[in-house]
Image (cartoon, one colour):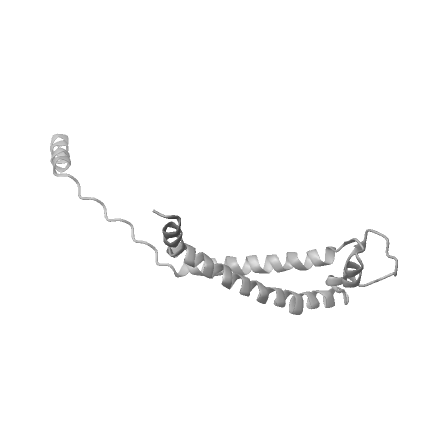
Length: 139
């Protein structure tokens, strides 16, 4: 079997195609969750805490020659920063995404039909005869 035919056989298997579709949908879904977190949830959390903007929480680790105060400007200037606000946003993003995936898997498992228990195998005839003999001897 040539490499090309082996690859073709591998690529057209159902699991590989399912994985590819899952990755594409997951990427698009990730963008939606990013938007929900960055545009809806984090501003609400910031408003509840006191007009706090998580995207601009950082600690400057090096020299700040121009006394810049915006994270994007500091990164553009090459100043090393410890951007823990970005991490908080990404962590909240992950928790929301993990919870949504958990709920989806839970729902899918609930929708799956429970497999019926396999029917018991018929008892062999010799075992039935031996039980009858045993029961008659007990009497």
